[in-house]
Length: 474
Image (cartoon, rainbow, N blue to C red):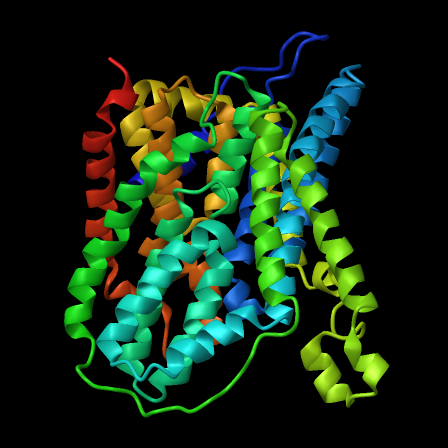
C-alpha cells in the first residue's frame, strides 16, 4: 500500500513550467495538468465502484478521456500549437485501433465457440466424471491455467466457475476456494502468452512498433515456469482446506453443435496466421487476425448453405442444434463481444496517453525506474495492478518505455498479469466471478487468502529472476 501511495504522490508532484512556443508543453505544474489528474482519479473511483453503483466501467473513462484531451487541446491552441496535440491523440487512436480489432476477432471466435456449445460440452464432461471436490479443485485450476493463454483469462474463469457452481451446490467453502484458485490460475496462465491478457497483447504489440523491444512473441514463454509457480504455491496450500467429499452425482447430456470442432481449428489457424504475418511478413498481427476472421465468415456461409435442417423439414429446435442459418450468424458473435471492455480500453488508452503527453509519465518513469531501480519498480507495478486495473498500469509503463533488459520487461509483464490475483477486484476474472458466484465468492473471502496468494507472487518473481537470470544482462 505504501508503494501504491508513493506512486500516486509522484503523479501529484509539480515540476517545470511551460516550455517555449513550438516545443511540447510541460503541463505538470499547470492548472491543466492538475485538472486532468483529478478528472482521471474521479473516473477511476467510479470504475472501482462498479460492483456497487452498477455503472459500466467504460462510461466514466470515455468521458474523462474526452475532457482531458479537450483541456490539452485548449491549452495548446492558446499557445499557438495547433497540430501537436492532434498528432499525439491520433497516435493513441492508432495504438487503440490495432489492439481493439485484434481483441474483437478473438472475442468473436470465443463467442462463436460458445454458441456452438464448445464450453458447455466441456463443463458437462467434467460434471459427469463424478470427481471429488479436491480433484475438481485441481482439474478446474489446471484447465484454467492452460486454457487462458488462448481463450483469455476472463472467458476461462467464467467457464471454470460454471463447472464449480454446477457441482459445488451449497458447499460454500468449496466454491470459495475453487473460485480463488481459478482466478489465480487464469491470471497466471494469461501472463505467459501474448493472447492470454490484454496487457500481454499490449506488450507484444509494442514490440511490433519498436524494433528493439520490448518482448517478441516467443520470449513470453520464458514466463511459463514462473507463472506455473505463481499458481501452484497458493493452490498447494489452499487444497488442504478443500472438503474431502464428493458432490452429488449429476446426469446431464449435451452435444456440441455442428461445426464446433472446425471453428476451434479455425481459431488456432487464425492465431498461426497472426503470428506468421508478424514473424515472416513483418506486418502487424492484427492484419492476420482480421484475415482469420474471414475464415470464420466463410465457414459460417458454408454452414448456412449446407444446412440439412431446412432441406429435410426438421423441427426448429433440432435445426438449432444442427446449425441452421438462424442458429449461426457471425455478426451475432461480433455483437456479443465485450464491448464494455473494449470501450473501457479506449478510455484508458486515451486518458493515460493524455497524462503522458502532459508530462506526468516521464516524471514517474524518472523516479521509479531511475531512482528506485527497475526491479523494485516492476514489483510495484504488480502491487498497483491489485488495486487499480492492470491495463492502465501496463499502458503507463509502455508509454514511459524505460530502458530495461528483456528480463526486466518480462518481470513487468509477469507482475502486471498476476498482481491482480492478490485482490478479487484486481482483475477482470475476479470481478466477473464475484458476480457469477454471488454470495459465495466475495471480496473478503478472497482477502483471507491474500497472504497465501502473495507467497505465490513473491515465489514467481524469485523463480523468474533465478531461472531467467541471463535475460537481465550484466
